[in-house]
Image 1 (cartoon, rainbow, N blue to C red):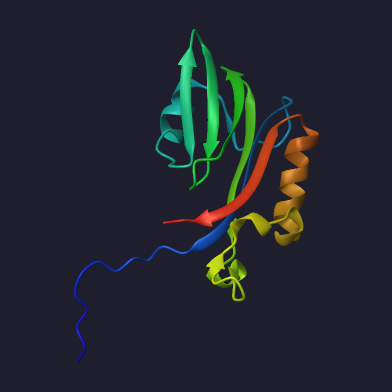
Image 2: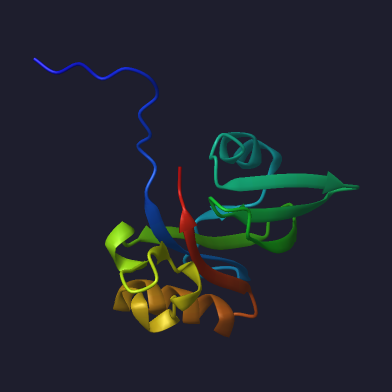
Length: 135
């Protein structure tokens, strides 16, 4: 039996697509901003919150540090997305011998995630995408 010694990494390459927007009252949303809900959402690793005199800044942070933000107050309705797709082979460039994370384009994502991304932008929110090592 072969035994491994030392550190074994399970990191891999991935692409990410993130976004956040405020939506009108009555519209479908991921959460309604309130102290109670925010305390539960702070447990989600992809969200970061700061408060200043009753106004919250909510960031969706990707695995490589890119982020999008939204300002909100109690009662605002928020939608957000954090999706990862892809694998190492999607970024490997054999002729160059390295991973090229800059070749990612919006069209590389699933139709469903592109639609979410475009919806967030249409609502006046912020959205971003990219690629890198995710672990």
